[in-house]
Amino acid sequence: MNSKQSNRPLEGVRVLEIGQLLAGPFTGTILGYFGAEVIKVEPPNKGDPIRGWREVFEGTSYWWASLARNKKCITLDLSKAEGRKIFRKLADQSDVLVENFKPGTMEKWGVDPASLEKTNAKLIYARISGYGQTGPYAEKAGFASVCEAFGGFRYVNGFPGEKPVRPNLSIGDTLAGIHAAMGVLLALIQREKDGKGQIVDVAIFEAIFNLLEAVIPEYSGSGLIRQPSGSTITGIAPTNTYICQDGKYIVIGANTDSMFKRLAEAMGKPEIGLDQRMSDNAGRVAVQQELDDTIENWTKSLSAQEALAKLDEYSVAAGPIYDARDMMEDPQFRARNLFQSVTINGKEIQIPAIVPHLSRSPGQTEFAGSELGCHNEEIYQSVLGMEKEALHLLAEKGVI
Image 1 (cartoon, helix red, strand yellow):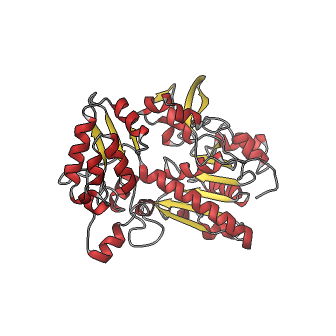
Image 2 (image 1 turned 90 degrees about the horizontal axis):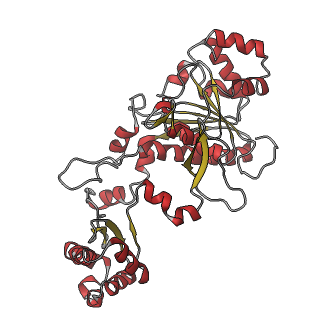
Image 3 (image 1 turned 180 degrees about the vertical axis):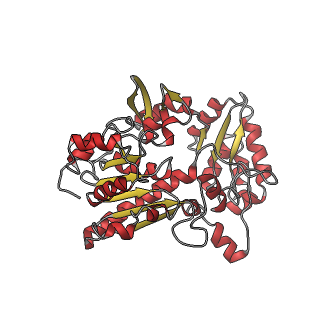
């Protein structure tokens, strides 16, 4: 870290991000949001595939505007010896390197941790892959979809007896990115103590594995294998999704003893809250279907808005199921400043803020994802001291 002062906690930390799609780049997004200088390395002419994925406006995806925010985009071809030489020089001037290639790729290029440590012993080297850098599956291809399944997440999702479902998001990649960012921060703290860098090894399946709560202890202790449970959660009641009179669904989670009594009062059925069979969670689980039927009979008599208003009145945890439009129109999201304006090809759009909120040194979006190679001159000249003529020659040879 250099001594440059700023209000954001990672100002002065230089991150060299090389990789594509989501897991590695999301790590860079988090670090850049909180002040790190993130240099994103992309192959010349092609760039990160995310630039063209999903909804696109004039050749650039809206997703790119968010994921690549605050990053200085440069091009460099690591398949060329000259490109690898330049990359090593950039790594020598960096605090953190983030990559999410298949294990062995960086070794093949000669820019693996052992090679770079020789000239930059303080470098923190974050590696994200499907199965991690060690073990019999290390070199297997592993995207979020398969790693969510391998890590146990898919098994417990969906309805009993039906095909396991996937949320319409790459949760495994995003979680791996968050874990990698956390690992980088821990490594930076350790470096402040001993002056040494280290490897941060994140497997996508392990990031998923970290979500499994009591699944492993319960199996180890009792032999119980947690099963899919549809819209409920095993062993806790009542917590479910209920349909209302207007066809909308709401979620109610009244699974503490005191809140369950308040739910009973909100429904106009205080006797349920006094029923000894339902006086604790174990008792409610034993009659879960009966209880859920009673609750849904009540929600069916009201619109979603009416049901939620009544539940709020009695301080029962409940809420609507929101889509993108709902979130952008809700005052709570606005009050929490969860949308930030950026411009993409002349069009203003909203992208999500990144949490957590810090009271004295908050993160911020400075600019949207940039054009391919638009920071080449700035980085190659200011960081490596290269002349414009040399850059033109490298561009002609396809190195940058």
